[in-house]
Length: 222
Image (cartoon, rainbow, N blue to C red):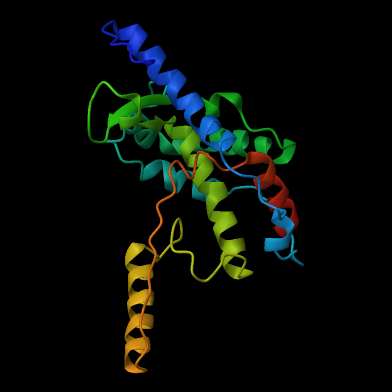
């Protein structure tokens, strides 16, 4: 941090915390502004997404299948007691989740995560060579899974996602993209055409997403 070598644990933690908080904003500030607004890239949807109340059965199922090897979140509640007590606590958690859905308020406690810096490569004294891993509470992750399942069904059913998107989709992976593009290359070669390829890697792409634009896009596409 500022070319200083830190040795005390709390100083190292503070330096990494500051880096993770500021790295995306520094990159965003150096990005050129687009001459077009996001509205020109999306099509307004004729459908509407509404989060439905979750069922006791689904909450129980997720609780009973929690992996006990998963790390506990800030609440220090490991997966095993949640799984063992699934039948007892499922009704209470269902009530909490549905209260959140009906009021539109996401519990603040579910937003708290334990951040662990994972070294990628290069010098271990450079903050840029670490990526943060967030560990949420198991209860928060169950709630997110329940809502995510509804959202995925809505997006896939209404064909809102681009066909070419392979990331963050069920039954898709990097192999899906590779198969599609290699098939296109082979077809071009059969036609006597040349293939020109440019591979791009966007630095901190996920962290640089503008939340205001993302929320506006969700409204347009809902």
